[in-house]
Image (tube, rainbow, N blue to C red; front, side, top):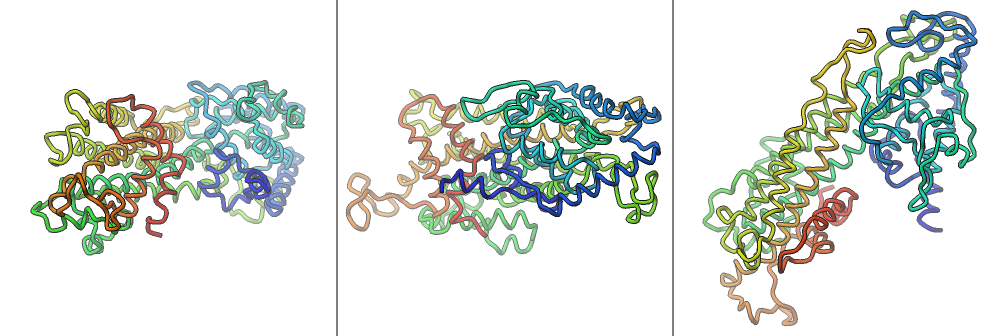
Amino acid sequence: MTAEDVKRTNPIELDGETLRPEDVVAVARAGTPVAVTDDARERVRASRERVRDVVDSGEPVYGLNTGFGELVDERIPADQIQRLQTNLLRSHAAGAGRELTTEETRAMMVSRINALVKGYSGVREVVIDNLLTMLNEGVTPVVRSRGSLGASGDLAPLAHMSLVLIGEGEAVHGAGDERVRVSGDVALEAVGLEPLSLAPKEGLALINGTQLTVGLASLLVVDGERVIDAADAAGALTTEVTLGTTATSDTAIHDVRPHSGQQESAATVRALTSESEIVDAHRNCDRVQDAYSLRCLPQVHGAVRDALSHLRAGVEIELNSATDNPLVFPADSVDDRASGTDSAAVISGGNFHGQPLALRLEYARLALIDLGAISERRVDRILNPNLQEPHLPPFLAPESGLQSGYMIAQYTAAALLNECRSIGAASSDNTPVSGGQEDHVSMSAQAALNARRTLENVRRIVATEAICATQAAEYVEDAFDEELGVDEESSTSADGDQPHHLGLGGGTGSLYDCVRERVPPLEDDRVLDAELDAVATAIENGSVDTSLSEWLPS
């Protein structure tokens, strides 16, 4: 059985309760298939029956037989309700800006399905099944990234996504070089689906919710945690190659200030640098203190960990929440029902409001900026001839002056950091819309897009540090050969076969190897951008975490 067969036989089961950010990443990036549990399907069917009861009663209910937003008081005749749902998708597909990437759209789709199968949205089972087929067969709607205010949810992006269900809009279908962009009806036909005619409430249920926000935030959580692991490792390697001390990660320090993130980053540095001959060789040197970018690594990185942990907690709740409006409940399960029948209560509320994620995303974005800032300072400490240790050549150039080495890599890191700092806070803005009916919005989707852009930049800054620290490791041996009594020209290992090399820690040595698989030692000036991209990609796809897994604390 091939790896593809295994993937196909082990879908992620959606039940509205247990979806994790890692599951979203697996579906969005790796194409892992999805299925819906039997219990969730039963809830979907029961919810749809409650909607039918309300529609049959003729009672005016928002989202079922009324207009939307400021037009809530406009009653829609029964024979026009299907047209109402179709018009809703068409009119709300008014996005702008770049198109979402495939992984961004797929993250939104899987989170939308999971919200619908909680059983409070009132859609038919066929809506769920068609979305599942689109995900599993690689039909990716073309979605514009701007237009959401994060209340009433991510309306415009979700409308672009949902158009394909009714055979409109555009989608990309296929894999690899065979991917083609086609109309919505052609995309459906390619996977054996017919365009849907939407039933009452289904249009609103599809577009009203926080699924772009939470999909992007899920990607951000996983990517952010990979970046902080890589930053801990790069910082630990920088500490070694600049002859800093790891005593600042001692448990005694962090036990008396027990922030969880701080303790975790300190434990990571201790684990990665264990067995380090470099650390042991200068443990009793004359240096009193290291610069803050080294000495305060656990405190700063730990605070970033705490921010990402706070975001993760919110994302895990949001992924498994009902966020559209109105929501449909059994009549006997609510205390105060605004409308409904003896069997069903339809309540119009505000679960679509993205503020719970918007504020956490802003917090995470600011934390990631600071991670980039401290990493960039360590890059400068490795390269800057006014700061670096005597064993390191200026800018790590073998022939400084004739060569520039990694000088401009630090320029780029500084430019990326400046861009991060120039990105404003989205969630502090508010622009009333819909004739004043929607007078406070969260801007959560923009907060997520801003945080994603920040993360991409910070990932490249951390990749720059990893590359520079790896190159600096090539020179560390020279700092100790005389002290250890090793003849550089004839130095050998204990078995007499190999040249002597002063050992890095187990984990930092693994990072060194991971970088060297992608970036050879710098012996002369060369073009660097592809190498920076390669290490950034290794951080993004988890290769760095995999290389460190043996050494990371459990």
